[in-house]
Image (cartoon, rainbow, N blue to C red; front, top):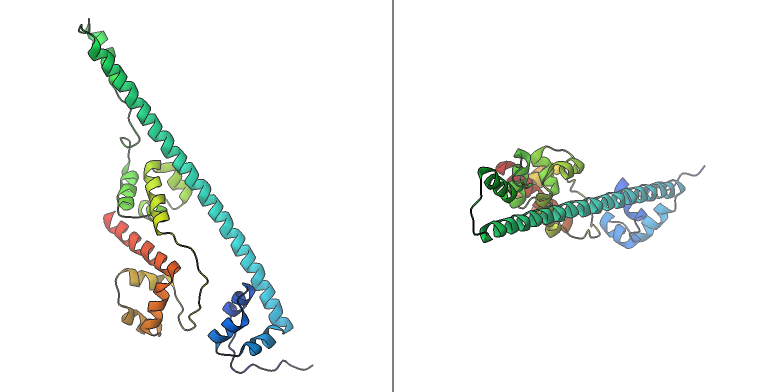
Length: 256
């Protein structure tokens, strides 16, 4: 059996299969991998390579479906939080109107209360029910501080230790969560087509170090890339968003 001819310059990796499965053109891939597009064309015609691409395409579809399900769940979460916040505000407005009406009726009377019981009834009717803000616990206060510092829902989860979005929805004041959602919306950006940086292998520590203010040259030396490579990487919108979120989490931990 004749063995496939070795492609001397091409060094394939899993990312190559994923990018081809995602529909990236051969010429763009070839320029990133320093080979001719015809070389890639011959490579992808190999049966075992075509199988790898099909598997990568299947994995990409599964990841996209999971991401779509997460986005749908997040939209439902946001709608529920905003509904609860509106209902809470409506109840408070209704209580305020009721108390104002009671006070207006009492002050319009010319006579004083006839006895202590009648005076107690007037005072009872004027009493405002405790609002959700009056009932704030420590986790509500922590959430309010981190949201005021610009934190979103994920920052609230980390600062309060509630671990999941469901716990936050159930336990944190919806009015605070609406502000957290608004902070998330203010920092959200569309995901672009990514350009691969071949030598850079990013990890969470990379973003954390940059968020802490470490210089590009110092980080670049540890990751064995040029500082200009890191600069281009941090200019990507999705990476810039991660950097902003890391800075928010750092500020939230200091506040908490």
